[in-house]
Image 1 (cartoon, rainbow, N blue to C red):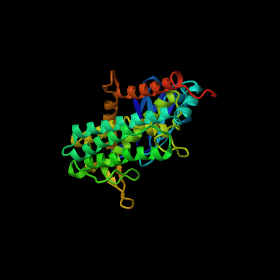
Image 2 (image 1 turned 90 degrees about the horizontal axis):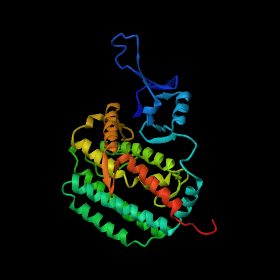
Image 3 (image 1 turned 30 degrees about the horizontal axis):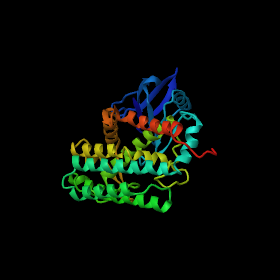
Image 4 (image 1 turned 90 degrees about the vertical axis):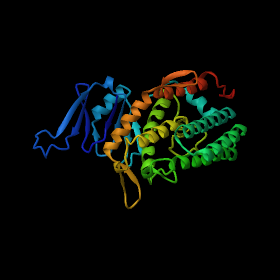
Length: 338
């Protein structure tokens, strides 16, 4: 199970090597109850990951227990933006993988990898437009043309040529989200994809889903022995996990389709969001977060077929990370001087 500590005053501690979850009872004072907290005990064997939100807390013993059981702890800020995670200091495999990784993403083979990644993403966007969006002919045609352009792109690590590749992907994303934004129920329609701050409810929900997905991808990469800070598509920046951003491109489609489904099925409503009158940012209330997280957990645990492999979506992420790590260790041949 995934453990989310999001309530104001919620706390995670440990007793006798068992997690103790304490959550405030909202109506305790109204009911004149002497017990203002509900308490639940959880074996660490049952917990897969922990999400910690602002105004909640965790004890050092709980952090140590999580690390010992290899349970990642994910930290969010008030805008539901991921701030970091706490995990064991040990990588999932030997250092040779990461040595080869740094060379791979400076080579033509690395450029081929990222080219295939973008083509896969664009084809997934085509699928979404075909399945969910009415009157998306223009956007679908543009993405089809972009796929042809990417397929004809000659793999190279030249920065100017990589910028051209990023341009194909970026303009396609603009058409893709533009089509989605105008096809939603009126209250959720939007013109532009906005990140921080999210200037409409749908983008706020999409940002939240991407944040949850981000942590899953990062954890899978580290478990496979990969360096999350070394890749090629997203421009390398100080302290930015570029491989996580690159790897996520394969799975963003899952967050997109889930967000569309939640809105179309009226499982999330406009009243579940509050707008900051100063910044214009939309924030998701706690009740809606629970709905979104529950839906995401069901979605990510569903078995789907990708290629010839049937796995749950979350295991596809872990499997893809292991495939890349295996390629770097056993099939990629770095320069002879290494």
